[in-house]
Image (tube, rainbow, N blue to C red):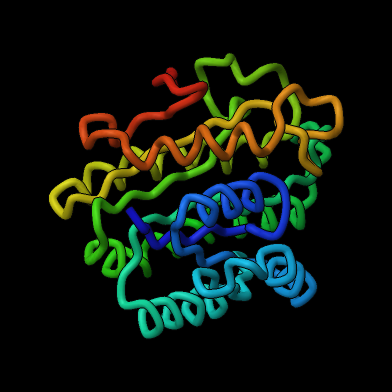
Length: 233
């Protein structure tokens, strides 16, 4: 099946690997990047798939950028099958609450939580018109209470991921009647700019796992998946 998949943050890391996996499967990919350099890089990396690749600029911290991107999708494609909310930022990862700056908090919430929230809000009509539509929100152990939050530090970042988990649950209930499935996906520790070189998982392995979520039944909508299994919040 050829799906139309929007992947945010597709110019590197997990997003880049998901874009490649989807294109190799025969899917149509809309990849986003925050910079012109990232847009050009994506086009160059996947030039053999240009007939099924659209690259758009998207700054999740800018409501105007989100609206413009969603308008381009609605007008150019008409519908969307999958939204992968992958893009995000990490800062003040070693900071305790007292050490966070307002800039840390504002930047992380705008990009990691408010941005994906607004993207979902604008794209619901396009997804409702899609085939077996779903939203996949990339989360992490640092935002799951079942992991005991893994010690202190990085409060603002963790709060954004916990918020993504809440968004997943709420959307799964609100969109069930429209047939839109919503999953949270915990990729684990991955060798990316954020994860570093010592992480045990490669982006390609994670991408294959994420793509498998597209075929999960509606009964699992609203759950968090890791290693192919439902995991506790």
